[in-house]
Length: 390
Image (tube, rainbow, N blue to C red; front, side, top):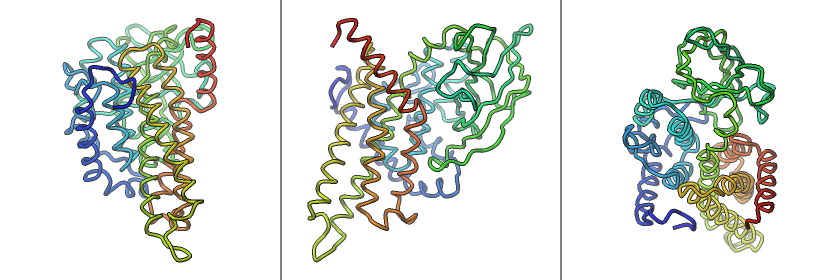
């Protein structure tokens, strides 16, 4: 059991879950992983499989039909699924984020409406915040929501919204009133098919091509006031409270990197050059030493952060940010080295490594760019120093 996990989590329980998730991923998700990428198709059949195995609603409370597990359990599942199919692991991340905001900040009516079908794999949510001129800085957001009787009328365009093309509801962020910066930003639950809501251009990214990313356009979209989930003036508090994406994101990186390392070790023991297999060359051994060190460091950082979050440790979000930054950069390096060890085969689409490299690169952007993470980590470090904590 990695350090800092909550003491009430049975290590044997996590080991059994890991084994179960790995067997499921290898049998159900790995065979079509290349297909989802090649055809840029979302792996919707896998969502149903995740639900049937308790993973679509892994962190949804049991009273709403979920598994009621901790974020540590979710990290185990995401890591193992990512080894076989990262875009399917991203579905676990997406559902955990939707569940987290609904359970932490939603009304009881909102929870009853969305959480049971989410856990059953019947619906998917999408986080609609990014705009062409407002990515990391929510204060630059231009989408607006004006009160009109019992409704809000929302107008604005969101871009690069992952799963937009397959989402059944959106957590749509817009400005309410004239308060400066992000203080005016609120969020609304908008169902697919709502009048005035439509999809724009479909995105085709270099990696996670089955992510179904697209523009989301609201044009005088009328939404009942009871669909507001984040009130103006509370965005900063909400963002501080949403921690599962920060630790599930690096968990997917860990799964990809661990898989790349295994592939490279196997190949190096099979490939021969100059009369012996290349695993015997010191240059290759040093690459493996760096890769193994990186994977193990990722694992320790991620599970420490997940354990702290599950235990309610106030330093958990800070540790999750450091884990995300380190894992994003380290996983890319590990996969890149694995490609180099494979030589021309690593660059070929007949092998999974080039796809893995494209997929893992996305995690240095989504969920907080490396640059924003560095700013937040430094700010957190200063706060700890000023308060006298280690």
